[in-house]
Image (tube, rainbow, N blue to C red; front, side):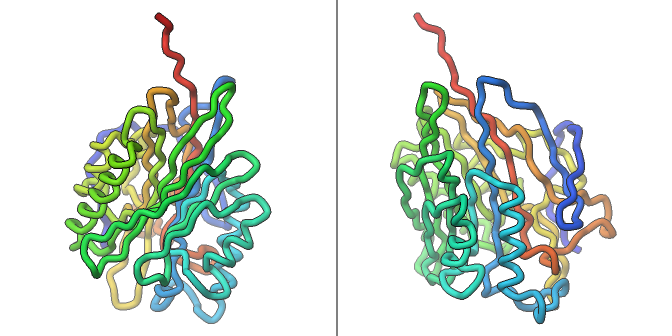
Length: 323
């Protein structure tokens, strides 16, 4: 079994248990919001493209159909009730688990902010938002081409949320970097491409609140992650001071391959000089102490090979002293 992990010296916070679909997961809560704060819930999820549904040891493809997977996806999203949904590996076409069908099953509460297909156009990244709470201002596509053969992309959406007497504007990014362990340099170049675009559009300045979500396919100690953090982003696991035997967001078994457990999916946040954003709580994958504890995904009750990352953010207006 392959596991990937970086050393950390963070404290071990209190945790509570949460059972969903028979799977024991944990809500970690750092603090409760005060009366002068507002809360936003984010859901980050690589939902597994139809191109990659073969050869799993943990599912029966006769019953684990795209329609069945979509029902599991819909149940999770509705139960978690996020304000912002960032997705990767959303198929461009098909009857189920594609951008059209997902938009349909979410339509009661969420609207599509933007969908950006990869260069090969079979799947892409998407952002949805809760229309009753948030207003969409703009959406742009960001290509992360390092070379002609690469197809990674990002979707950047800008939203407005009425916050007390102020209008709170924030930017959300959904992206998906190159997979495979030997592609570290490509991921770093793609990260540079993304951050340079933010700098060009002045989204890197002290006035911008940014939430970066994605399947980054990188270990926490990889150069691409360090580059994001050097840009002023905080990884929510580190802000929450999470210390587990293994940091991970994927635990999978493919036929003919060694089982893999690793950290691949992230949410990063960056405050501005007008509004602070902090992670109040997050839903973690099941705790692993040994191989016997591992819940392998996908399985008949879970539709993807990536655990969804769910986090609650507290936003507070920063009141500067008058002179």
